[in-house]
Image (cartoon, rainbow, N blue to C red; front, side, top):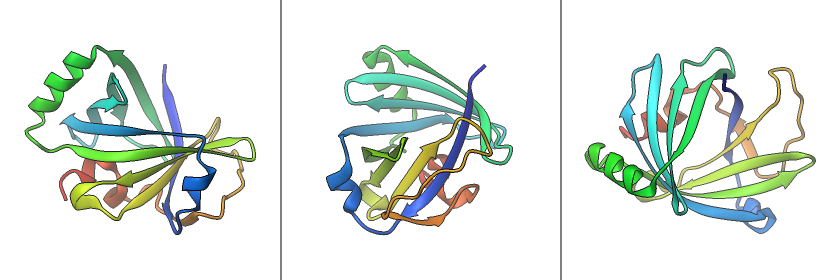
Length: 149
């Protein structure tokens, strides 16, 4: 069973850009935004993904992600009726952890959010200099909610 344990933070400067070892363009939409479960379709680079996420319990929740054909992902994004989030994701290694930093595009600019996935809920981790306020659990920063704004 898939479990996601994740913390989310606002980003206070763009130093992550020079620290990043990779980046990719992401387009995503939601086929279901029920608070108990979300179903997301995503195109990341040239690959498609379908993801089902359960309700958060603290910083963890069930997550199931499957690669799907790119053509299927494109068709599913069309089902989202134009409510698509576009972002550039940067990958930054920092003291044994990988941070994913999302620069949102379009109406969500200039929002930049960083996430770190953890092996357990009680894992401590060092903070890079670009990390600001902890917004873990703040519904305003869930991608499924941002898409409505």
